Image (cartoon, helix red, strand yellow):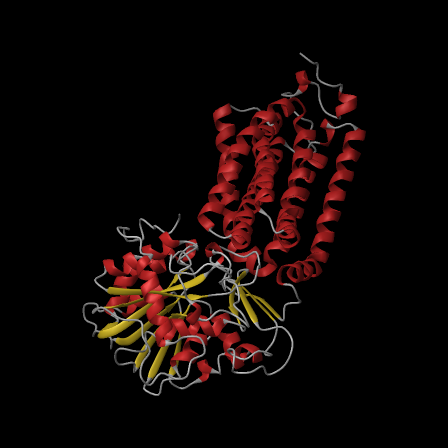
Length: 589
């Protein structure tokens, strides 16, 4: 066995001295209390690092369940590894704890900035996420054995009592850190600065404990070394705080391709808008200027592009507006006002209720010159009523209940919600959600749902259709060719290809796998590169995707294209899929 290094080299005690009472500048009772206070602070900081990784990974990669599982499982495993490694440092617990806390403050404090840099400039953050989870977990796991040794050196007590005191402080600190992250750090400081400030608190607490309370355990050389290391860590973290804003701006330019015209962190999500009002709402409606088209990103995912949003919104709204009355319309989601724009093109519409979770998006849709021009100021129309809230909760409150009169049903319900592949949206594509929606639907009403990409994730798309049928509705699936940029966004992004002379139209809808397609050059070179937005039209009686006789002039959608789309979708049906429920979501493939 290799003998431990001499104290002169390590700046710590010999192994035989490890459990001797420490020489403290304060009474042992106060010293023990100070150790427990540092345990409290370090536990809070450790949980903030953990939550920071989960939050940032969810934003950058998507799918919060997967990212939380990866971070938590890797960190718990790494904590066990760190605890084992810390056994070698127990004989020199003070200097070991000081080194661990300095490393943890540096790595944890800069983790958010490093992850964002990997995402912005290299387009990949998963490997960095695992690496930081592993490193932070090892360091956090090493804290407890070292702190256990230090608290025993302050005042000897039975092991059970010492462990109880240590874990009590640790768990209370974790509670405070867990509450401080969403309610204080994130809204006040943001992800980058919040992590850096947490690292600074971590470094000060760990450094103060070792350099002041246990200073007699260190040689002069070790004391000055730890002091210099902690000062360097604090300097790096302070520089990060000062540079956080320009760093975020540079990273945003790298992600979005140009300086963001609007970048707002609302209570719900990050809202970024690039480009301006230089593009009309669709081909043939004319350009009003020059420059990049307006693009709206929510939590890093492209939601609206002025170049082609009309294709999506025409296909979403107009088939549902045919086949029956349309005086009262309910829109779930769609805070950008673009679906409402299409609905208001019908004179028969008397009222539109829009239920949107994020008031910040609604505010931009009303006040931003580019977005309000694109939606034709639809949310300022007197027929439109905007309700802020979760669509599921709102439907639940509106349903009939004892002592309350049943609300007036809606003729058309438009579900313009994020893709079901996003974990946060799965409840909005559940059997329970559609059951609530049916209660608000008139007997001859229609419900249309944006159901995700039918060819990229066919199982998820047809699960939406099966879930709608599970609440007693008849369905008619159809699709629309879509085109997205190559932005490295979340799971609901698709890529389509333009046809000759511009983006493909619904008239270009062909089944590339059909033997009827002649050989030779095709508009879209390969079947697997064709991308679609997928929709499902549902009603109590079998619906048919069509356009009303009095439908306004449309750019992308035609009656013939809708019929061809419905036939192509019917051929691609995946039968026998179970419905998705709150307790058993089925949108992961």
